[in-house]
Length: 192
Ligand code: FE
Image (tube, rainbow, N blue to C red; front, top):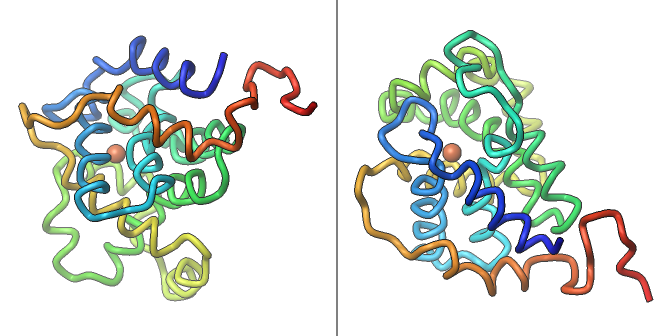
């Protein structure tokens, strides 16, 4: 299966799931985040990162982890899944999008007040705001700036009923951002 087929299959199977504690589905949330990235003029890999930033939630993970006070580390699961088929410009902002939330809670006084109730709840199990040394370490990471952009789109992508382009609209970006059209993700080598 190609990465594009895998992505389409995951959204087909799990995309109608509710996005944690919000009034949108996983697919609606992903499409709104991608549309915001596109509207900002982001490059293809960052648009794909926005679209797939919560792919970790579409992999096998129980729905109510945050409510039970457990962090499923969906950003790590998602980034590792993406890194099989995409470079760090896609995988790393995804890996850092929870750290970006914790960073913004520490550095932007208005940010916490803008977060949804569900996002405030999950902040606790994600470790809370970053400390001073963690703030400096985050800023030094190569994809920190992209992760912060992604985080803002993520937070805004929760509007019930918003009409945005559909998943098929992103086929070309997914293919262009992947490591090679010939690369297979089912274990077969793409080498000639
Ligand atoms: Fe999200």
